[in-house]
Length: 162
Length: 465
Image (cartoon, rainbow over all chains, first blue to last red; front, top):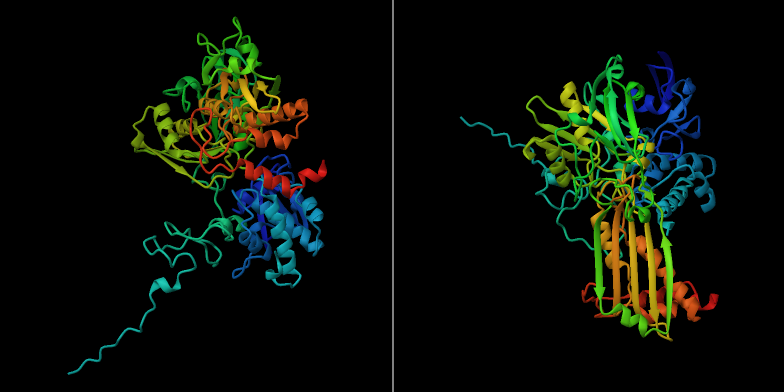
């Protein structure tokens, strides 16, 4: 067993896990944060995407011990007690998620993008989502929602959309 | 003596505080969903007529999806729950000589092992019950399960699979559906032949139509096998409780049918089975029949614990149903103007090792194979054939996309051969109001031509040429 300590959604969390435990399994099974999903277990589908020190990563490919001392943001840490994150709001308003299984990963990829590029082009959004598969093929509405939330995050009105 | 009666402060009706969506129909149970975020949650408006066309639709489950709070099967767990894994044969056609599970059973953390002969009724299927839950005597395709393990962790279950020794006697195998139809081909499910369902659609006199034709065009079209690839793999949790009742949480889309199948395979009255369908992370037709549910139930009976099974991505590809590859032979006679006088179609569907939803797919492919065109003389014959490959079943469209690829490619070939605009030849032959389908159904609200014309106008069909 190895002891790991990291900041998860702003709180310091510690767990004792077998060394082969992935970050995804640590989050899901030890911290009960099941928002990140296991889709393929080989880093193709992006359903397990979380943000580690500002960068989107496939939590199924990162060992828990590699996240030692780092700051991890999961989908559960995005909304506040009173408010949805603008990306979550836009995804709901635009009905961007169908079965929803890819949703947490997509939203976190979008968050990492918008943190770095507040006004991304369509192509930049596509590139940012290239590691997230949506088998319901709802990419168009996701891109629209990300554009809309970018507008909101920059301080514009959501109504200027469409 | 007078007693002052303290009047209670006027209370607001609880209905006034309900979040949006809930105020409408108070017959719904007005129970707030337990979410860790004090955020109003949408409740579906049941039986309420709402304007739909032109309205922006918001999904009632959209918020929880975005919050990551939707609970799919793999997000649930029960106290003491075990994890199951299934050993896959890895050989397409073989006789199982022996299965030795002793080394796996001796492993610390392994709670139970299950093999095919322990299953009360080891067969299932939506139309023919030709699929074993775990291969017992014979292996019909490489993705067949041969044994299952329940262990305290998924990792231990995976390691235990490697310790199960299965001795196979390889048998001949057949992979090409056209070869499989030939006399003397290896019979996948001997003594039955490989052609397990046939569909014929006849209309008019196809030979007379060919005789009257100006030109005859022929073509063969093939499509490939396609996996649904739902991002959520097949998953289920089974609990066999001490009262002899079985509760299964499953990603299955058709729980009513699944309940009957589970009851049959476990040889239990149907009222002993409780199937709970949860939110499904993508189905596309691939989660329309039971897969591992009875196996998990039996492992739960053996161990007295809840047992969870989640397919790996590899198992999704090799052990779950796929889309039928179809070999499609088309022969079409046309007059000078490009009007179709006769069409003959032969479809060979690769059914893989088991029937699954092949009969449904066969029927739909055969009926739709002529395309949305007025054809007086038509002959369609369609076959679905066993091969030693991953079984094919339901997938979006049930055979319609495959034949659409064939008849539209064929139409382009005809248009090119006659030097007619591909749009014009379609407008000439397309169904109109009152046209009869190949099976004689009179069609109404037919807008094929309008759609084609509008689409052509929108993307500038004329200009680009």
